[in-house]
Image (cartoon, rainbow, N blue to C red):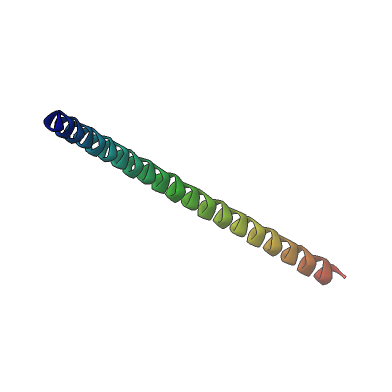
Amino acid sequence: SQQDTNRSNIQRYQELKLEISTLSQRVDRIFSEQQIVLRTFETDTARALSTADSRSRAFVDELRSQIFQSKSQE
């Protein structure tokens, strides 16, 4: 009957609403996790670049002082 159809439609609607809500929460959680991963990656990258930068500066300083030493010994 029409009433049964309506009842099953309403039930299906409620199930879909719940499913959408669950999926939406899952998407939010995945998004948050990805934000954390990205932030960690950015931090690690910045740290690595900073380390590489200070190492290359130290290397250049060392070279410079060696060049000055060898020039002063000439």
